[in-house]
Length: 225
Ligand SMILES: N[C@@H](CCC(=O)N[C@@H](CS)C(=O)NCC(=O)O)C(=O)O
Image (cartoon, protein in one colour):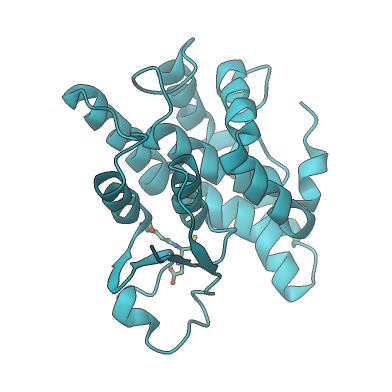
């Protein structure tokens, strides 16, 4: 077996694939490709130039959702997609809600602005960046957190009573938000926050979080509740 994940590990989409591989107990190599300075020929594997890309021997794929769906077919056990048709569709929807809804808001305005860019430029975030992040967290994200809180309800996992791609997709980008010093507050979203605590304690998340925190997560200590 020669599985290779291409893409810097701090990307929520790369982490989603790495956590999926870990939950399935699969070994892989990791090449931390920077999408803004990719190796020659990278677009042959990832035509939009984005990370992650993935190789399985001489097969190549890109896009986290596509890669995770491929892994499920290729390595079905343990299953990370529900077998019930409706639960399956609901898990895909939660994945899309995060990848296409929450992450495009929180990624650039919170994580990139407060954690990634300052690291690259070695300059603290501007007052404007801090303000944009605060407004995103206080105005744009609460309805999305409300939806997640309500959808999770009192369950341990989002769909079907066991871990699925839905849970991985929710927990991964919120790691990035945490690195930037923001998390859904316990007082307002206790179920979502408890879910994140549990997910981030799983070995599949714990290992990348422990690797990444010293580099990207200095502001995580600012989270008070
Ligand atoms: N839908 C894609 C999104 C991937 C994506 O946006 N990756 C970002 C890094 S987090 C990227 O490569 N950005 C570089 C670019 O857009 O050029 C997936 O799920 O893999």
